[in-house]
Every structure is written in structure tokens, then in C-alpha cells.
Length: 157
Length: 236
Image 1 (cartoon, rainbow over the protein chains, first blue to last red):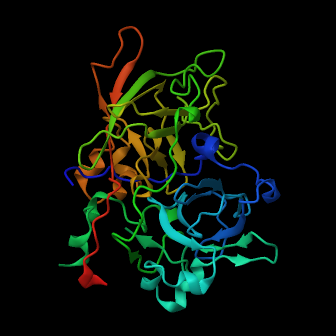
Image 2: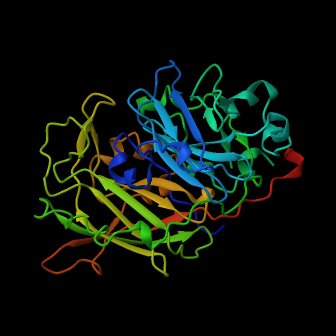
């Protein structure tokens, strides 16, 4: 490496002005495509207060989806499920000078346990990286705790 | 070798998560140690945004309405390179900013400064084959925020960039030279290394300044490359 990467700064509270065009505004009906799944959840802070001004990016090998949280700190996104059955996720928000990075597993837990990244996670924290199913096929629930008890596992690379 | 030396980005060139002077970070910054996965991330994954992403006129924020916005017209140009110095071609840049009075066109901005019906404050562009980009916009105003007593943000333009993949993703802010608010801004000063901090300040640029039209400012950006250094096996 010859050059030092430019420093990160927060997205601030008004990122929707610039970042709305590539973001999902309304969840698509997952029935519209058999490959699409729905992931919904809530982001909260150390006080368990919902975070209404966060932006989540879901990165697959080819798949990409971006969605902001609503006033109540919830999000709903309808991406195509990657073949690898997980998404790498970046979360931006006011209060974070750089995004947090995590990985959300959407497949069978036993199959995911061979993932090299998951092997580095203390067993008592692994559950934060798995989506729950809400009973309907292809519908997942994943909540994010930024700080404190049951804090979501975040990675650095 | 300690863990700081193993990382390929000097720690001080990036802000930490917890920046106590930036009040919003206190309850949102992770408190548990991050898990280092250097070398374990699949490289260069992610979306490719092509020319279909951009509409004509997206890079000129002064011509998105019937009339021209108020304020000082500026031309912002720069080069996007990776950390080896190679130009990053076709990188999607999205920008957003306040108007000349320091007001964002956003329902949650209640600063008592006027909105400008001729300014939305949103722009997009792809870098060319040399990694160059160019926007025409107006110089944003400073504005108050409630972080602390008499807190004011220095004038800035938000930049979002997609490079070669997840490792290259960057959101930052471009500042203006000579801004008296910079030393008092908890966001700007959250970057420990002074040189890294100063690189967020654009420079006034005669070559892109157009006579009788607009001042030029230059803001070059370095994205982390798509490679990630293999993890030291002794660390596992």
C-alpha cells in the first residue's frame, strides 16, 4: 500500500437526500419473484431506543440492496438470496464515524458453522448473526443491537 | 507483532467508533471488541453500477430546477485512486449537501434558514477512465447542530463512493480551506492523525476555476483496494 485511504466520516441524519435513488423505498412483495426474500428487523442503541436514521447495505457476491430505517427504527428489505446464503452487511448512521460491518446468515445453522468468519466468534454471541424465520417461507427477522447486552457481533477487516 | 501493526490501515488515519465529543456516538458505538477478519473476506464482491445509474444532469446541482440556486457557484473535481495509486474507473459517487444558507432539503432539518426552491442538494456521477470526477454545485453554508452549546458544522459536502467492492466502500465529507469552524468540529477532529484530517479539506484550484463563472475546488480520494492482506496464521 502506497497511499493512506481517505478518512471516513458519518453519513449524518440527512443522507436520504443523496442516497435515496439506490435505496429500496417500499418493500417489494416477495411473491413478485421466487428468488426474493424478505428481511425485516429493528435497530436499537445502548438504551434499547430504536434508531430511526440508519442505512443498511446488504452485499452478496452479485446481489445488492440498500434500505434506510423508518421513524420507528425498523427496516424491511426484499433482496435476492445469495447462493452463499449469507449477506455481508454495512450499517451507516448518525453517530457512527464509519460503518459497522457484520454478516447475516440465512441458511441452516449447522451448515453455516463451517464459515471461517463464524469460527472466530465466541459461541455465546453467534446467535446475533442468524436471522430468525417468522413462519412464512423466505421471510426472515433480524434485529441489531448496537451496544450493550446482546450486542450484535461486528467485524473489522 | 501487535495487532495494530498487522492492520494494513494505520489506525490513526480513521476515526474510532466511540468519539465522546460527538455525543451521538456514545450510545451507538459498539462496546465489545471487534473481531478481526483480515484476509477472510471474499474480495471484490458487490454491485457494479453502470451508466444506467446516472441521468444526464445528475452532476450539475445548479441545473436541476427551472431557476438557478442562490449562492456561490463552485466546480468540485478530483481523482479517485486506490491505495496502490491506480485510478478507480467507473466508481459511483453520490453527494448531498445543505444549500447556501445552511439548510438541508429534509423534513427533519428545522434550522431557521430558508430553503431554496432551486436547490435539492443531491448529485451523482461515475468516475472516468482516469478516475476523475466533476460536479457543479454551490458552496454549502455552515449550520448549527445540537451536539453542544453553540455548535456549528463547518461547510461540507457529503461523499459516498463505491469502488472495487466492500473493502473499498467509503462515505466521507469534503471540507473547505480556511474554514474557521474546523478546529471546533467533533467530526473533523475525530480523526486522530492530523495529516489524514487535513486530506478531507479540499484545495482552491485555479485550473478548474472558470472566469466569470465559478470557483474550482479539488478533492482527491483514496479508496482502500479490493485486496486484503492475508491473515497472520499465528493470529488464528
